[in-house]
Image (cartoon, rainbow, N blue to C red):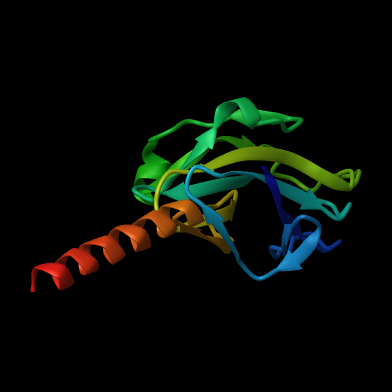
Length: 173
């Protein structure tokens, strides 16, 4: 089962863009989400039809329990990024593999409203993942936290195993 995680970018109509993130799961706005290990999400960047200047990059710090799914990168107008280039190494981050590229000067026509790009993300272990959205000069716009927990069956088996160990110790005492 896939859940949809959406970043909403709220951009102003002035010469500079102000942005924020909105996380939605199954159409409902939430502050954070908890998912199972090996579960996949789709992360989308949404524009409200404002004029956008420069570039945006979706990044994940190195060493966190998650990976991008290249087959689910389905944005329009995306130019492949460079993994482990000097910029990413400086910020110790792993690039999503793509960046939104727009002209560095003001755009005359507003960017169309809606989802500008979607990226597949898979949880690979227990722990928190911080996915961050950066603008062209590498200024962080806002981070998003995804909490990953063991699946319920794993927790049930661990509990059953502990009960059996405890019972054996009780019998041997």
